[in-house]
Amino acid sequence: MTNSTGPLSGLRVFDLSRIMAGPSCTQMLGDMGADVIKVERPGQGDDTRKWGPPFLKDKSGEDTDESAYYLSANRNKRSISLDISQPEGQKLARKMIAKCDILVENFKVGGLAKYGLSYEDLKEDFPNLIYCSITGFGQTGPYAPQAGYDFLIQGMGGIMSLTGEPDGQPMKVGVAIVDLMCGMYASNAILAALHHRNSTGQGQFIDVSLLDTQIAWLANQGLYYLTSGELPPRLGNGHPNIVPYNVFPSSDGHFILAIGNDGQFRKFCEFTKSMELFEDPRFNTNQNRIRNRNELTPLMGEVTKTQTSAYWIENLPPLGVPCGPVNDMKGVFSHPQTVAREMKISMPHSEASGGSVDLIGSPMKFSETPVDYRKAPPRMGEHTKDVLSELLDIEQEELSSLESSGVI
View 1 (cartoon, one colour):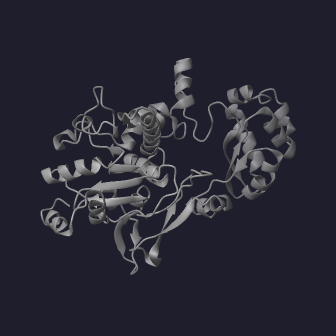
View 2: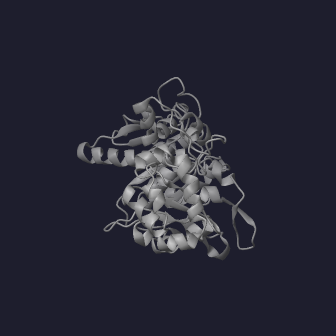
């Protein structure tokens, strides 16, 4: 196995998760250097392998079995096929867990108990194991037994009531943001548990849920309600506490103005020769602009649509007026700052057309222990025999027997 430069080098993760929340968590741990062993059911694998099109193209231009969705969250892992529903598979799992520091799973509450792999089943034999369970609703409460899905949780957790045009439908966020944020909280909790274990030698159980995560990152909008007792309004692209902070029309499209204080608003008005807006008592302070946003926004639009988006984006930021484009994916990945920060990467992949696959890079930049990219998202079961031989010293004859019995 390729040595890692990351800060978690030397740690090993037994990854029983699939879809997005768990895999995004373990991908972050893998990027930071952990050896992540992704456990997949033989012949089936992670559900997201089938969530396409689009799929990665092979050298003949045909679809492979690797969907873009799967590729997004499974870098820096080794995939093994293992049927934990079989007693022999459960024995192998326990033997590998003995060699691991962290276990991540996202089965429904109690789902792993029938395989003898719940935290209660493992904690006495592996007292230093950090066991992270990701579920829809957590281990307690009346909804605990139910499965959770990102879209449902966006609705239940309030974010859809805040997203979309004021007179339109409630709208979900365009990526699986609850899953991704849950993976972020889970990885953060795991790192905290590692610190505790380094001090005490003691592992622990971590309970992270999609609904708790969604409620936690309601942030200022949640506090808007808790502080005032009033429901935050749905404002489309507007901001509840800053005006003007919105998408505005230009002569050839749209761009973003994110004016955060009175000084920036004055600079905008000076540059655009529209000081009458700044001098209007309805608009001369942020508080007044919030109260009168419906009057100010169309007046701002009349000013901004006199020039192109490029004109505003070139001229306003040097004055200290925050301004930027509304990029599509092509714009994002061709942007010079994206390129400079290496947020688009390419990794060798044996089945890919051209021999490599393009992926999104890690945003974590360490000065002494940099993130590294050791393994492209693995094919299902690609590393089964290597991992079992490396961790458990299983010989080829026994591997062949396990394969023929369907355990691997």
